[in-house]
Image 1 (spheres, rainbow, N blue to C red):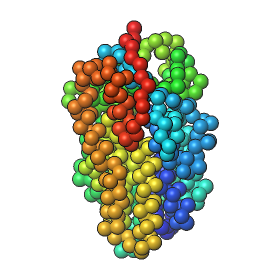
Image 2 (image 1 turned 45 degrees about the horizontal axis):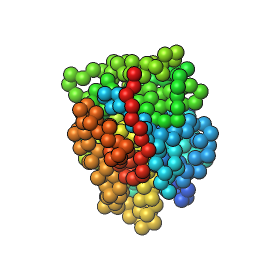
Image 3 (image 1 turned 135 degrees about the horizontal axis):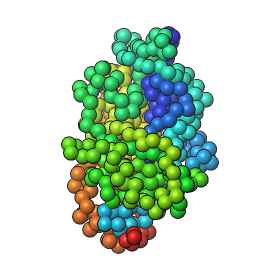
Length: 391
């Protein structure tokens, strides 16, 4: 295959597909490449924050997603000693007042289809081996089902998630960054599911947390994520150790998938985000919150920002390294402080004694909600909380 495009987007997850959508809506010719065909599964917590839903609404997808997703209206946080704070999803004018839980197999296919419907040319099962400059733009080389792929474009956008092989091969990353690890599985016939995210610091390696995210018809996504270091248990065994914490809900439930683990890049604060005629979006730029593990919202937002930056660059006729750096500047202005702050909190706050100390004051001092709101784009809203000790 040989073809020429304005932009070639490598990776058709939320970051890549949103980039392709916002570019094609402005009339640019876009190739959207992925190593898989869609629909395909993606190991994830499956939660969509109001910030993520806001971008998806901009793409015209929110009504259809509400139909297939499970609506979440609150967040329950359990600290190590069993105290619980219950907090509503914030009501903020520019965001929907709820969250959703949707499997990535469904979500990613819907977003990718939206990009294709807007004009992007999808090239599935394309394994990209390298990107080179040729003086006029970039050449993307790879193979598709044993046949060579050569895509020429004025600019490339890399949206390959936590997989850093291509970035290292291109010297955009000198070495693979340190990553968090996570694992999840699904249970059916889960009793007592409600309309809230359950996040727990009980019986999990800190800094990190376990989760139970409700889905339709008694299905739940259950997982755990934490920062790796020597002497820690494997993420699969850590997840099995977390199951007893939620045993009341799992009393008659059945695990319907094996435990699947995955790495998480959270290094945006120090990560490269651009190169010569190249932009990095989503997790390829380290854009996953180092404290909460949220990444879909940053993926969608960075895709939209990348498209805006490239549209300006094309209008100016300036695809220089300096113009690519303006994308990095925009990302830093929007996300850098949050990532640095959350990394500091991850290291300093997530200690059992401190979490236990904060929980009783959540109602009067809004401590836990203010932190949760900070992790979700500094939304400040009144807290409605309660506390109790389970068991």
